[in-house]
Image 1 (cartoon, helix red, strand yellow):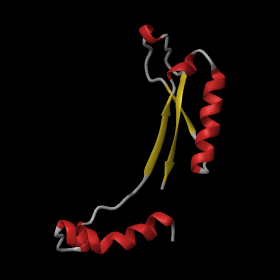
Image 2: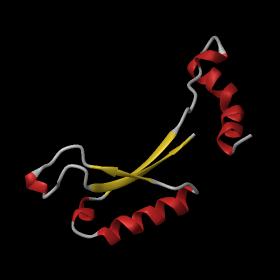
Image 3: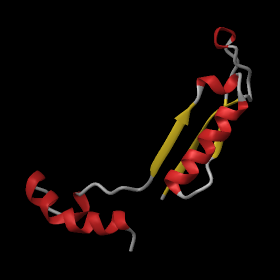
Image 4: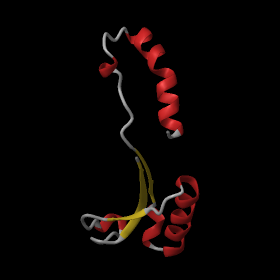
Length: 91
């Protein structure tokens, strides 16, 4: 059992009392947590993106996925497909 699941099980009864739920199925559940890091400076310097990937890897324990720009924006000197951030999904 994960730490998040154990904490959830501890808090179930207090949530039932606080919000007056009639059934345990009404209690919200955490399905996933997404950690995102957007880097505006990564367009000019690729070392910043590498540092961000290493930081997210240390925080989450998983390999981050590099996010890319969907469309070009001339004002931000951004091209379509250019790496602009990274994210990790924890389930």
